[in-house]
Length: 102
Image 1 (cartoon, rainbow, N blue to C red):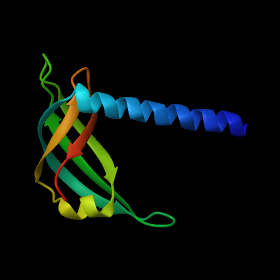
Image 2: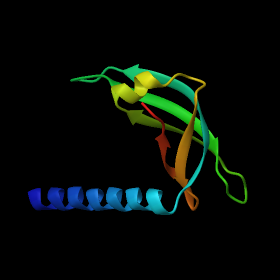
Image 3: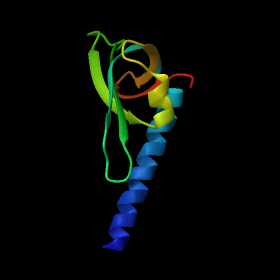
């Protein structure tokens, strides 16, 4: 059972590394508007969330609306209505990350 859990963890790590590589080498960037930000109480510490939307450069001009978790420093640097850059994969715009200076 531990070996299976370790294998799943390794597989997830490889998948995240592959995604990160693709976001660096195959992505497009576009402006994203922050729609909301909120904090939720956790067992040990709070969790910080933002929701954002952007229009992906696809033939359909796909509108994407997502939420993500982030650390406190990033959360404190953002306000609802801010415009930041989002980096996304053209074949799957929901695979993305926000980019902004803190």
